[in-house]
Amino acid sequence: MDRIMTNRLDRGYKRYKEEFEEAALRVLRSGRYILGSEVESFEAAWAGYTGAAHCTGVASGLDALYLALRACDIKAGDEVILQGNTFFATALAVHMTGARCVFTEPDEYHQLDPAGIEAKINDRTKAVMVVHLYGQTARMTEIKEICKKHGLRLIEDCAQSHGSMSDDGCMSGHSGDFGCFSFYPSKNLGAFGDAGAVVTDDAELDRRLKQLRNYGSSRRYHYAEAGVNSRLDELQAALLSVRLSHLDELTKERKEAAAFYDTHIENPLIEKPEVRPGADHVYHQYVIRCDRREELIKHLDERGIDTIIHYPVPPHLTEALAYLGYKKGDLPFTEKLADSVLSIPMYNGITREEQERVAEALNGFGD
Ligand SMILES: *Cc1c(COP(=O)(O)O)cnc(C)c1O
Image 1 (cartoon, helix red, strand yellow):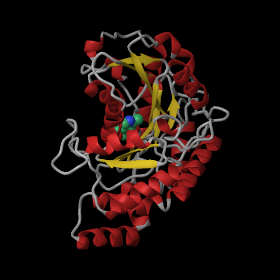
Image 2 (cartoon, helix red, strand yellow; image 1 turned 45 degrees about the vertical axis):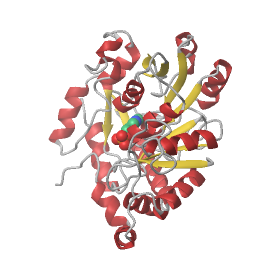
Image 3 (tube, helix red, strand yellow; image 1 turned 180 degrees about the vertical axis):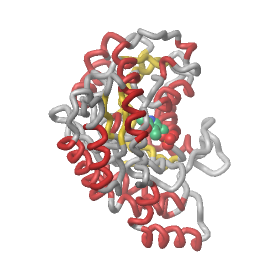
Protein backbone atom coordinates (compact mmCIF):
# COMPACT_ATOMS: atom_id res chain seq x y z
CA MET A 1 0.00 0.00 0.00
CA ASP A 2 1.33 3.47 -0.88
CA ARG A 3 2.34 5.77 1.93
CA ILE A 4 0.04 8.72 2.48
CA MET A 5 2.18 11.82 2.48
CA THR A 6 1.42 15.18 4.07
CA ASN A 7 1.23 16.79 0.63
CA ARG A 8 1.19 15.78 -3.04
CA LEU A 9 2.14 18.76 -5.16
CA ASP A 10 2.32 16.55 -8.25
CA ARG A 11 -1.45 16.08 -8.10
CA GLY A 12 -1.98 19.84 -8.03
CA TYR A 13 0.05 20.14 -11.22
CA LYS A 14 -1.53 17.23 -13.12
CA ARG A 15 -5.04 18.48 -12.45
CA TYR A 16 -4.57 21.58 -14.63
CA LYS A 17 -1.52 20.35 -16.56
CA GLU A 18 -2.50 21.69 -19.99
CA GLU A 19 -3.34 25.15 -18.63
CA PHE A 20 -0.09 25.39 -16.63
CA GLU A 21 2.01 24.28 -19.58
CA GLU A 22 0.33 26.67 -21.97
CA ALA A 23 0.91 29.59 -19.57
CA ALA A 24 4.56 28.66 -19.02
CA LEU A 25 5.23 28.42 -22.75
CA ARG A 26 3.52 31.73 -23.36
CA VAL A 27 5.93 33.41 -20.92
CA LEU A 28 9.03 31.62 -22.24
CA ARG A 29 8.18 32.68 -25.77
CA SER A 30 7.33 36.26 -24.81
CA GLY A 31 10.90 37.42 -24.20
CA ARG A 32 9.75 39.36 -21.11
CA TYR A 33 10.49 37.77 -17.73
CA ILE A 34 10.43 40.45 -15.01
CA LEU A 35 7.72 43.05 -14.24
CA GLY A 36 5.69 42.61 -17.41
CA SER A 37 2.06 42.06 -18.31
CA GLU A 38 1.73 38.68 -16.52
CA VAL A 39 2.63 40.25 -13.18
CA GLU A 40 0.32 43.18 -13.84
CA SER A 41 -2.61 40.98 -14.70
CA PHE A 42 -2.04 38.67 -11.72
CA GLU A 43 -1.77 41.67 -9.40
CA ALA A 44 -5.06 43.03 -10.75
CA ALA A 45 -6.74 39.64 -10.41
CA TRP A 46 -5.48 39.06 -6.86
CA ALA A 47 -6.48 42.56 -5.75
CA GLY A 48 -9.91 41.89 -7.22
CA TYR A 49 -10.21 38.52 -5.51
CA THR A 50 -9.35 39.90 -2.07
CA GLY A 51 -11.41 43.05 -2.61
CA ALA A 52 -8.37 45.31 -2.15
CA ALA A 53 -7.67 48.30 -4.37
CA HIS A 54 -3.98 47.45 -4.94
CA CYS A 55 -1.70 44.44 -5.10
CA THR A 56 2.08 44.19 -5.39
CA GLY A 57 3.74 40.91 -6.32
CA VAL A 58 6.92 40.10 -4.39
CA ALA A 59 9.38 37.24 -4.18
CA SER A 60 8.08 35.40 -1.09
CA GLY A 61 5.74 35.50 1.89
CA LEU A 62 8.58 36.56 4.17
CA ASP A 63 9.34 39.49 1.87
CA ALA A 64 5.65 40.40 1.76
CA LEU A 65 5.62 40.74 5.57
CA TYR A 66 8.98 42.48 5.77
CA LEU A 67 8.17 45.01 3.04
CA ALA A 68 4.71 45.73 4.51
CA LEU A 69 6.38 46.57 7.84
CA ARG A 70 8.96 48.72 6.06
CA ALA A 71 6.24 50.56 4.13
CA CYS A 72 4.64 51.35 7.52
CA ASP A 73 8.00 52.84 8.62
CA ILE A 74 8.45 50.23 11.35
CA LYS A 75 12.05 50.24 12.49
CA ALA A 76 14.50 49.76 15.37
CA GLY A 77 13.03 50.98 18.64
CA ASP A 78 9.48 50.00 17.65
CA GLU A 79 7.47 47.06 18.92
CA VAL A 80 5.10 44.79 17.01
CA ILE A 81 2.55 42.58 18.77
CA LEU A 82 1.97 39.09 17.37
CA GLN A 83 0.83 35.69 18.54
CA GLY A 84 3.36 33.25 19.97
CA ASN A 85 2.18 30.26 17.93
CA THR A 86 3.15 31.15 14.41
CA PHE A 87 5.61 30.14 11.72
CA PHE A 88 9.05 31.57 12.32
CA ALA A 89 8.87 33.84 9.24
CA THR A 90 6.17 36.03 10.83
CA ALA A 91 8.55 36.91 13.66
CA LEU A 92 11.59 37.00 11.37
CA ALA A 93 9.99 39.77 9.30
CA VAL A 94 9.68 41.90 12.43
CA HIS A 95 13.26 41.12 13.43
CA MET A 96 14.51 42.12 9.96
CA THR A 97 13.15 45.66 10.38
CA GLY A 98 15.05 46.03 13.66
CA ALA A 99 11.77 46.23 15.61
CA ARG A 100 11.01 44.00 18.60
CA CYS A 101 8.55 41.09 18.61
CA VAL A 102 6.12 41.17 21.53
CA PHE A 103 4.36 37.82 21.71
CA THR A 104 0.87 37.14 23.07
CA GLU A 105 -1.11 33.98 23.66
CA PRO A 106 -3.55 32.60 21.07
CA ASP A 107 -7.17 31.64 21.76
CA GLU A 108 -8.39 28.04 21.77
CA TYR A 109 -8.79 28.21 17.96
CA HIS A 110 -5.04 28.88 17.57
CA GLN A 111 -5.66 32.52 16.60
CA LEU A 112 -4.45 35.84 18.03
CA ASP A 113 -6.56 36.52 21.14
CA PRO A 114 -7.70 40.16 21.19
CA ALA A 115 -8.04 39.93 24.98
CA GLY A 116 -4.24 39.78 25.31
CA ILE A 117 -3.36 42.71 23.06
CA GLU A 118 -4.05 45.83 25.14
CA ALA A 119 -1.87 44.75 28.08
CA LYS A 120 1.11 44.69 25.68
CA ILE A 121 0.61 48.16 24.21
CA ASN A 122 3.04 50.94 25.20
CA ASP A 123 4.58 54.04 23.58
CA ARG A 124 6.84 51.93 21.38
CA THR A 125 4.04 49.76 19.97
CA LYS A 126 3.51 50.52 16.27
CA ALA A 127 1.64 47.54 14.82
CA VAL A 128 -0.28 44.34 15.39
CA MET A 129 0.42 41.41 13.10
CA VAL A 130 -2.38 38.85 12.77
CA VAL A 131 -1.80 35.35 11.38
CA HIS A 132 -4.85 33.42 10.19
CA LEU A 133 -3.11 30.25 11.28
CA TYR A 134 -3.89 26.98 9.47
CA GLY A 135 -6.46 28.87 7.36
CA GLN A 136 -8.91 29.93 10.08
CA THR A 137 -9.68 33.64 10.30
CA ALA A 138 -8.89 35.53 13.50
CA ARG A 139 -11.29 37.84 15.40
CA MET A 140 -10.77 40.74 12.99
CA THR A 141 -13.70 42.89 14.11
CA GLU A 142 -12.32 43.14 17.65
CA ILE A 143 -8.67 43.36 16.59
CA LYS A 144 -9.44 46.17 14.13
CA GLU A 145 -11.23 48.08 16.88
CA ILE A 146 -8.22 47.84 19.22
CA CYS A 147 -5.81 48.98 16.48
CA LYS A 148 -8.04 51.91 15.62
CA LYS A 149 -8.36 52.96 19.27
CA HIS A 150 -4.58 52.96 19.81
CA GLY A 151 -3.52 54.22 16.36
CA LEU A 152 -1.68 51.02 15.47
CA ARG A 153 -1.01 49.59 12.03
CA LEU A 154 -2.70 46.26 11.33
CA ILE A 155 -0.87 43.77 9.12
CA GLU A 156 -2.33 40.36 8.22
CA ASP A 157 -0.16 37.32 7.56
CA CYS A 158 -2.41 35.44 5.13
CA ALA A 159 0.17 32.87 4.05
CA GLN A 160 -2.26 30.10 5.09
CA SER A 161 -5.64 31.74 4.55
CA HIS A 162 -6.13 32.51 0.84
CA GLY A 163 -9.81 33.01 0.19
CA SER A 164 -11.09 32.79 3.76
CA MET A 165 -13.63 35.34 4.97
CA SER A 166 -13.15 37.20 8.27
CA ASP A 167 -15.93 38.07 10.73
CA ASP A 168 -15.84 41.72 9.58
CA GLY A 169 -17.04 40.62 6.13
CA CYS A 170 -13.61 41.15 4.54
CA MET A 171 -11.67 38.55 2.60
CA SER A 172 -8.57 37.71 4.60
CA GLY A 173 -5.93 40.29 3.73
CA HIS A 174 -8.45 43.10 3.33
CA SER A 175 -9.19 43.94 6.98
CA GLY A 176 -6.09 45.92 7.93
CA ASP A 177 -3.50 48.19 6.33
CA PHE A 178 -1.78 45.34 4.51
CA GLY A 179 -2.57 41.72 3.67
CA CYS A 180 0.56 39.64 3.07
CA PHE A 181 0.46 36.41 1.09
CA SER A 182 2.87 33.60 0.36
CA PHE A 183 2.43 31.49 -2.76
CA TYR A 184 5.00 28.89 -1.71
CA PRO A 185 4.08 25.70 -3.62
CA SER A 186 2.31 24.00 -0.70
CA LYS A 187 0.08 26.98 0.17
CA ASN A 188 -3.61 27.01 -0.76
CA LEU A 189 -2.72 29.20 -3.76
CA GLY A 190 0.65 27.80 -4.71
CA ALA A 191 3.21 28.78 -7.34
CA PHE A 192 5.96 26.54 -8.78
CA GLY A 193 8.70 28.25 -6.83
CA ASP A 194 8.87 31.12 -4.35
CA ALA A 195 6.34 33.93 -4.71
CA GLY A 196 4.29 36.32 -2.61
CA ALA A 197 2.11 39.43 -2.72
CA VAL A 198 0.88 42.32 -0.61
CA VAL A 199 -2.57 43.88 -0.93
CA THR A 200 -3.78 47.22 0.42
CA ASP A 201 -6.50 49.82 -0.14
CA ASP A 202 -4.05 52.67 0.45
CA ALA A 203 -2.52 54.07 -2.76
CA GLU A 204 0.39 55.71 -0.94
CA LEU A 205 1.29 52.53 0.97
CA ASP A 206 1.11 50.62 -2.30
CA ARG A 207 3.45 53.11 -3.98
CA ARG A 208 5.96 52.64 -1.13
CA LEU A 209 5.67 48.88 -1.41
CA LYS A 210 6.31 48.92 -5.17
CA GLN A 211 9.31 51.20 -4.63
CA LEU A 212 10.75 49.02 -1.84
CA ARG A 213 10.52 45.79 -3.87
CA ASN A 214 12.55 47.36 -6.67
CA TYR A 215 15.70 48.60 -4.83
CA GLY A 216 13.84 51.62 -3.48
CA SER A 217 13.37 53.03 -6.94
CA SER A 218 10.19 54.11 -8.69
CA ARG A 219 12.04 55.84 -11.55
CA ARG A 220 14.81 53.85 -13.20
CA TYR A 221 18.25 54.58 -11.68
CA HIS A 222 16.78 57.05 -9.18
CA TYR A 223 16.73 55.78 -5.59
CA ALA A 224 14.42 57.39 -3.08
CA GLU A 225 15.29 54.90 -0.31
CA ALA A 226 17.27 51.73 0.29
CA GLY A 227 14.92 48.94 -0.80
CA VAL A 228 15.47 45.33 -1.79
CA ASN A 229 15.16 43.16 -4.88
CA SER A 230 11.96 41.25 -4.29
CA ARG A 231 9.94 40.95 -7.48
CA LEU A 232 7.40 38.37 -8.54
CA ASP A 233 8.53 36.99 -11.90
CA GLU A 234 6.45 36.61 -15.05
CA LEU A 235 6.56 32.82 -15.04
CA GLN A 236 5.23 32.48 -11.50
CA ALA A 237 2.63 35.18 -12.13
CA ALA A 238 1.30 33.37 -15.20
CA LEU A 239 1.15 30.04 -13.35
CA LEU A 240 -0.53 31.70 -10.36
CA SER A 241 -3.18 33.21 -12.64
CA VAL A 242 -4.06 29.69 -13.80
CA ARG A 243 -4.35 28.37 -10.23
CA LEU A 244 -6.28 31.45 -9.10
CA SER A 245 -8.92 30.77 -11.76
CA HIS A 246 -9.59 27.49 -9.89
CA LEU A 247 -9.13 28.69 -6.31
CA ASP A 248 -12.84 28.55 -5.39
CA GLU A 249 -13.14 24.88 -6.35
CA LEU A 250 -9.82 24.09 -4.62
CA THR A 251 -11.03 25.75 -1.41
CA LYS A 252 -14.37 23.94 -1.58
CA GLU A 253 -12.51 20.65 -1.95
CA ARG A 254 -10.36 21.36 1.14
CA LYS A 255 -13.48 22.18 3.16
CA GLU A 256 -15.10 18.93 2.04
CA ALA A 257 -12.00 16.94 2.97
CA ALA A 258 -12.02 18.60 6.41
CA ALA A 259 -15.72 17.81 6.87
CA PHE A 260 -14.93 14.17 6.12
CA TYR A 261 -12.29 14.10 8.87
CA ASP A 262 -14.69 15.95 11.21
CA THR A 263 -17.31 13.24 10.86
CA HIS A 264 -15.05 10.19 10.59
CA ILE A 265 -12.39 10.79 13.25
CA GLU A 266 -13.69 9.65 16.63
CA ASN A 267 -11.19 9.01 19.41
CA PRO A 268 -11.30 10.45 22.95
CA LEU A 269 -7.48 10.78 22.88
CA ILE A 270 -7.64 13.09 19.87
CA GLU A 271 -9.00 16.63 19.74
CA LYS A 272 -10.22 17.72 16.32
CA PRO A 273 -9.86 21.35 15.15
CA GLU A 274 -12.83 23.57 15.91
CA VAL A 275 -14.03 26.57 13.97
CA ARG A 276 -15.04 29.61 15.98
CA PRO A 277 -18.64 30.73 15.30
CA GLY A 278 -18.36 33.62 12.82
CA ALA A 279 -14.96 32.52 11.54
CA ASP A 280 -14.13 30.81 8.26
CA HIS A 281 -11.56 28.05 7.75
CA VAL A 282 -9.92 27.11 4.44
CA TYR A 283 -7.89 24.26 5.95
CA HIS A 284 -4.37 24.98 4.84
CA GLN A 285 -3.74 22.37 7.53
CA TYR A 286 -6.01 20.04 9.46
CA VAL A 287 -4.45 20.20 12.90
CA ILE A 288 -5.41 17.78 15.65
CA ARG A 289 -4.17 17.81 19.25
CA CYS A 290 -3.02 14.83 21.25
CA ASP A 291 -1.19 14.68 24.58
CA ARG A 292 0.43 11.40 23.56
CA ARG A 293 1.73 12.88 20.30
CA GLU A 294 5.00 10.92 20.00
CA GLU A 295 3.14 7.60 20.32
CA LEU A 296 0.51 8.77 17.84
CA ILE A 297 3.14 9.77 15.25
CA LYS A 298 4.71 6.32 15.57
CA HIS A 299 1.32 4.58 15.36
CA LEU A 300 0.47 6.44 12.13
CA ASP A 301 3.95 5.99 10.67
CA GLU A 302 3.69 2.23 11.13
CA ARG A 303 0.45 2.34 9.15
CA GLY A 304 2.05 4.23 6.26
CA ILE A 305 0.80 7.68 7.18
CA ASP A 306 3.05 10.74 7.36
CA THR A 307 2.36 13.64 9.70
CA ILE A 308 4.05 16.96 10.43
CA ILE A 309 4.16 19.33 13.40
CA HIS A 310 3.29 23.00 12.78
CA TYR A 311 5.34 24.07 14.75
CA PRO A 312 7.43 22.21 17.31
CA VAL A 313 9.39 25.26 18.54
CA PRO A 314 7.54 28.58 18.92
CA PRO A 315 9.53 31.62 17.71
CA HIS A 316 10.05 32.99 21.26
CA LEU A 317 12.01 29.83 22.17
CA THR A 318 14.22 29.75 19.06
CA GLU A 319 17.96 30.35 19.29
CA ALA A 320 17.66 33.07 16.65
CA LEU A 321 15.37 35.18 18.83
CA ALA A 322 16.94 34.31 22.19
CA TYR A 323 18.08 37.95 22.46
CA LEU A 324 14.46 38.94 23.12
CA GLY A 325 14.86 37.36 26.54
CA TYR A 326 11.88 35.00 26.54
CA LYS A 327 12.16 31.75 28.43
CA LYS A 328 10.20 28.51 28.66
CA GLY A 329 7.00 29.10 30.61
CA ASP A 330 6.52 32.71 29.43
CA LEU A 331 3.76 31.67 26.99
CA PRO A 332 2.29 28.53 28.57
CA PHE A 333 -0.63 28.01 26.15
CA THR A 334 1.56 28.61 23.09
CA GLU A 335 4.04 26.09 24.46
CA LYS A 336 1.32 23.57 25.27
CA LEU A 337 0.09 23.79 21.68
CA ALA A 338 3.63 23.33 20.35
CA ASP A 339 3.82 20.12 22.37
CA SER A 340 0.47 18.69 21.26
CA VAL A 341 -0.44 19.82 17.72
CA LEU A 342 -0.17 17.46 14.77
CA SER A 343 -1.05 18.08 11.12
CA ILE A 344 -2.51 15.09 9.28
CA PRO A 345 -2.57 14.71 5.48
CA MET A 346 -4.64 17.54 3.95
CA TYR A 347 -4.12 18.78 0.42
CA ASN A 348 -5.91 19.25 -2.86
CA GLY A 349 -6.18 15.90 -4.55
CA ILE A 350 -6.28 13.71 -1.43
CA THR A 351 -8.67 10.82 -2.13
CA ARG A 352 -11.54 9.53 0.00
CA GLU A 353 -9.76 6.18 0.28
CA GLU A 354 -6.68 7.91 1.67
CA GLN A 355 -8.76 9.89 4.11
CA GLU A 356 -10.56 6.71 5.20
CA ARG A 357 -7.21 5.09 5.94
CA VAL A 358 -6.10 8.13 7.96
CA ALA A 359 -9.35 8.24 9.97
CA GLU A 360 -9.26 4.49 10.60
CA ALA A 361 -5.67 4.65 11.81
CA LEU A 362 -6.49 7.55 14.12
CA ASN A 363 -9.56 5.79 15.49
CA GLY A 364 -7.47 2.70 16.24
CA PHE A 365 -4.94 4.63 18.32
CA GLY A 366 -4.80 3.71 22.01
CA ASP A 367 -6.69 0.42 21.68
C1 LIG B 1 4.69 30.13 4.60
C2 LIG B 1 4.50 31.15 5.61
C3 LIG B 1 5.25 32.34 5.62
C4 LIG B 1 6.43 32.57 4.73
O1 LIG B 1 6.19 32.45 3.37
P1 LIG B 1 7.42 32.15 2.39
O2 LIG B 1 6.84 32.36 1.04
O3 LIG B 1 7.84 30.74 2.62
O4 LIG B 1 8.49 33.12 2.69
C5 LIG B 1 4.95 33.31 6.56
N1 LIG B 1 3.99 33.12 7.48
C6 LIG B 1 3.26 31.99 7.53
C7 LIG B 1 2.19 31.87 8.56
C8 LIG B 1 3.50 30.95 6.61
O5 LIG B 1 2.78 29.83 6.68
